[in-house]
Amino acid sequence: MTVDLDLASRVLDLVRAASPGAQAEVTVDRTEQALTRFAKSFIHQNMTDAGIGVRLRLHDGGRTASGTTTTADADGLRALVDRTLAAARLCPPDPQWPGLTPPTAVRAAAAMDEDTAQATPAARAERVRAFVDGAGGLETAGYCGTTLSQVTFANSAGHTAQAQAAEAAMSCIARCPDEDRAPADGVARLVTRRLADLDGGVLGVRAATKARAAVRPVELPPGRYEVVLEPAAVNDLLANLAMYGFNAKAVAERQSFVELDRVQFDPAVTLVDDPLDGGLPFDVEGTPRDRLTLVDAGVTTAVAHDRRTAAAAGTTSTGHAVPGAGAFGALLCDLRLVPDSSRPRVSGEADGPAADADVAELVSQVGRGLLVSDLWYTRVLDPRSLVMTGLTRNGVWLIEDGQITGPVQNLRFTQSYPDALAPGAVLGVGTHAIALPADWGTRTYFAPPLRLASWNCTGNASG
Image (tube, rainbow, N blue to C red; front, side, top):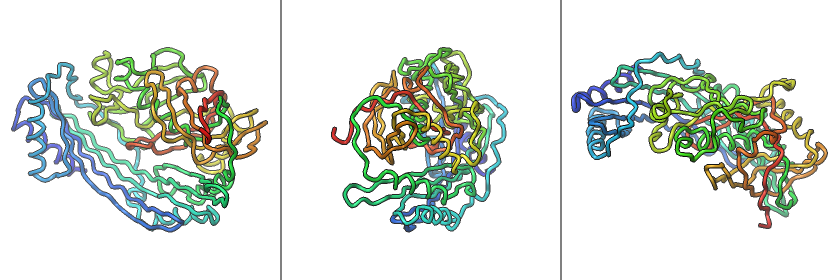
């Protein structure tokens, strides 16, 4: 990584030579993503995508601009500096420029697992084989992937930071055929910091069990239902709360429901953003990241800031700047819904049988409602109240008197996510939080299952 620090320093030197008064920051990202993909229960592709990205942001003559390149040779770096300075001259004045992050201590990143960072296709294929075997003859598809990220930051104020992280992920389905209707799919997903912790056999059994249980679903009428959301469904709630809710720019522009120091959630809800479990310890502005509590037992306590929104609010950055934050705002990276610690924790790994027992415990408390595996195609109807619409998928089941009585056809919903988590609306939180990949970007969310009093289903298979 010393090479990348030298590379960033060269970019800063080029900026100084071209415009001595400019303030500049440089981020060098090296990413290696490797996938083993399979369909119809056979591996059909091993691929690796390794690349470098250099991002320059500078403030020159009261104007701010940024640029990127994937060409890290001398000509590519000089072209990056020249066009970014040229862009700055064409930009409008930026009186709200917050300045650069001063030299600041950044904690060391969590130890990276070398076996994950250097994983071979054979190591990923072992997990795929275990998944296929665990599915017990059902047709399967999906991927096992590993990612190595190395990030280097430097600015003209003298601040530097470096970190690296690795993770492994599986996202797979098992399909159960049905001669009379469309086949039923069961899904299993998981992200870990160590490839060795990915048990493809356990995930295969889970996906196949769900697929077999979802055959020949019945249609239910639209209406409000009590629900148990499995972690994959809760993942969508967290992703949209992160993007549209706890975003300081959206809050300042009155485009978010968030109001600080108010009881906006059920006391069972505590939300934290925590990079300490393998996440990167600084953001693209070089600001150190630490554990940030956003909701404490139902009370909204914080939002995500970058340097610009923090300066406007008279506070400090929380370390959540991302590329393009000036237009969109800061984003949470490692959002976690804290599991319920008041109940005895089911023993075992969070991604193993204990996770299924966690869901079963919440199901046993429901008089009549739905068990929902997954949400997808979700879209914002009203960002201020965070009313979302979307569909269920990969399995929905009717719950009666604490027992799953049969599969249900997919339903459309129209639901305010904050209302679903409001005081009195959360009837139970699981004791295990499972790490799941976001649908976009490199964020990771940690989600336990949830039992909610009401979920507004506005359509069914008939319309």
